[in-house]
Image (cartoon, rainbow, N blue to C red; front, side, top):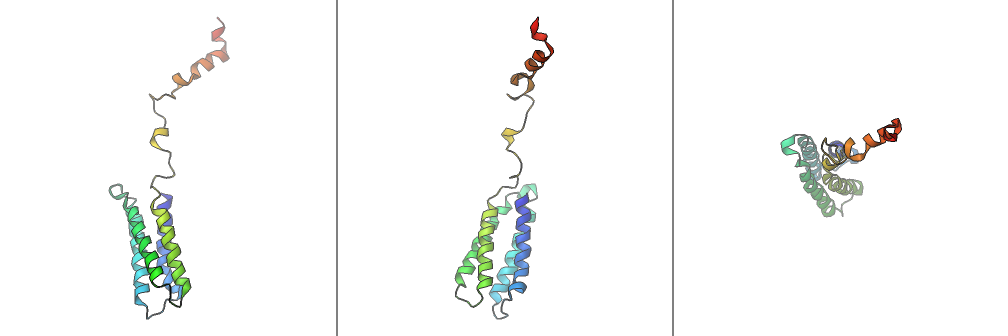
Length: 138
């Protein structure tokens, strides 16, 4: 779930970015986009922790695409830092949206099972133990 934590941080950054980059007061669309996208990302990242909505983080890709679209639309404006911020955040959100929630855990097929091939009997641990104790020398 580390990627959801990163998405939470990116959402918080997006909420702070109008103040950091000094969006002009006349550009209400920039303010609304940053606040709506930031709140949406935070909500989707938190919603992904719930088992029933564990794939909600995939909607973050749509938000990331919208941020890239807004950056492209306003690319001729006079504040390139805010535009670049939206484009970079959109790309980061696209990358993190495809990371599964359980990315830091091994796949289920790698987890040991009692009746698996790699149980102590099949690996030969018991024969190794006998050879150390001299039980095979009879």
